[in-house]
Length: 193
Image (cartoon, rainbow, N blue to C red; front, top):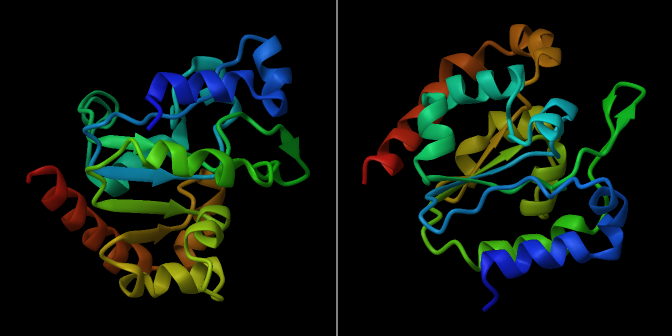
């Protein structure tokens, strides 16, 4: 089995990532061996890329609120892995960031997950993570999140915590009434073991 440093070096040296490597941009993910919860989102945002810190924006603030953890626990406890569908900022599209590159997760996720023996819950944020990790699921994101109990105890699907989703949150009050308390219960239980 490859070490985390070997995998990271392979990602950096992969021709698919040469444009980022040439600009001295390293892949942005976290895979501490002690992690118990894995968070799979779309890809780092521009601010995350610039600050070299994943979920370092308003979306990250809301995500930590949903999880019921503070910044210190999230970044420094060694209990959270963050393995997005792409480890590099994909650029801006017409209505937000571009999607993660195709084939990226297939190439790198299995290698990284092999180094994480203690993962008890994988949080799937948004359509790309949900399509990859729940390939038999045919529901859209809203219905997948609404039916989150079907995917427990291994997977917990969420909508993106972006401020852009404020209208969605207002239209779907069940999310904050039912889903978030359940998520916080799972997180608290897993982290306290």
